[in-house]
Length: 284
Image 1: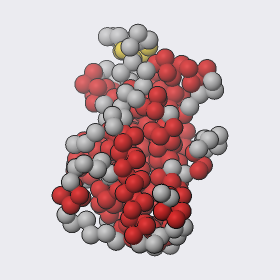
Image 2 (image 1 turned 30 degrees about the vertical axis):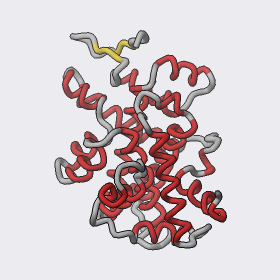
Image 3 (image 1 turned 60 degrees about the vertical axis):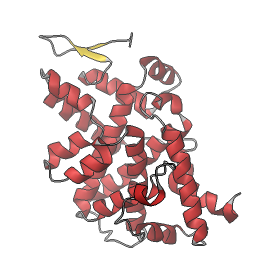
């Protein structure tokens, strides 16, 4: 059943056509941002094995805590640390999309500063790229995504039902408004049970938390989370999978993996005691 075309609206939200065939060049400023983030972390990790492990296992919380301390413990706890990676990835993807559309559709202040404008744009690019990997490149993400495909399908199915009940077909402004207008005082799991693995309304709760923040801070948090999500996936993907991708021209995630090797970060890399040089462990 296609719900009178509603499915097209759902795929526009959750799987942008831009990334069906991701051939667009990565903006230089985004690559520079990723480079600088990893470079700073390599300085934190220098000669400290425990910090190195913490950085390599970080999925978004480390960046927030280092920048803002424990101010956003609810965001880091409920939406990153206390849930599986694949669930967190989908939550942040939908929440990023809701925040992005809310601003670009004129429902929020859009007079971005230069940094906020870049972070706003880059967050959307990385969010879409990560969902592309989850859905279309599962071999790259198999070590970290668990039941990510099931969560994705259930989330799309719940969105289809939600949109169809409200007669929403192509109006993405109304779709965004109606999702954010849902009363989420009671956690979704208590309303629908846990048979469905949809994260639609949990993501709505995250978007509401993020929208409470000042614009510049909101997008600084979101982009830092996405860089950590990307680097976590890169460091946990099998080296031979990265090697195959590089031989075909390479995915962004594989270039991030190589950059992490350069900085001595990641589970496939070993720092020899007394030296700062990274050694690639290809047998993992």
